[in-house]
Length: 282
DNA sequence: CTTTTTCCCTGGACGC
DNA sequence: TGCGTCCAGGGAAAAA
Image 1 (spheres, rainbow, N blue to C red):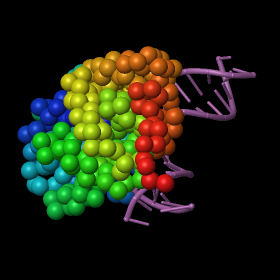
Image 2: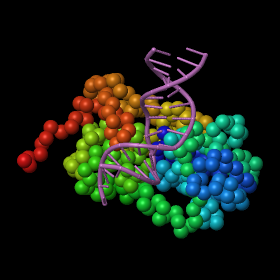
Image 3: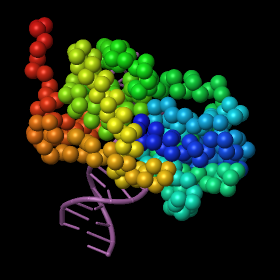
């Protein structure tokens, strides 16, 4: 499941291979990849573009071309990139191939075909992102106050609020669970009712979890590998995700799994206890 | 407006 | 072995 750390790892791995290169030929094999646009037409438009930079916004990869156009890629569940020479092409799940001007291929794979490619004009990028993606949690400007402002007045569970990309760009199910465990906050607490100290802990926790994820090159659960084919090692750091019934690393209480925000949600019922109504209002 | 639910998609795990 | 069923979940869209 590519979340911020996985997407950032992919970006870093791909960057040296593609920046400065020209797309000699593009082939898109999945009719759904560029919906609602015709994949053959998108492929034609990609041909000849020279790549000026590879950026990340939340879970989006943005391939910036010298022309100013941008290819906005979302990997969703199983999208992934490989570079040729390190892995045989024409795998059963190869959905697109970009042939570069140095003869190498950038291969896009996506088992479940949830991923999307959207080619946008220069003036379309920011408006598109603005209504979908909030602040980058690892930027210096993302302070506790930033997080607090995004959560203020919200009655949705904190788990659901964290998964909202406008709250924390790039947050996903795994890192949300890990961050809430680190902050010792119950996933179903109403987001707007978190105390000042809890917000401080959560701010620190989610940044720590995401930074650790990047340092470990992401988490490999099934499909995900870096563009070099390396497995991530973040799964070895999981404290709660996928550990239902196992002892909490902090207190030994068995980890519980519930349904939160429509997603599997793992937490320690002792460390992350729901506060026993401290509220004094009747 | 906010929040919740449904849907898309496939392969792996599991029960019989 | 093989078949049916369930599950994983990011985000768009629909429903509440």
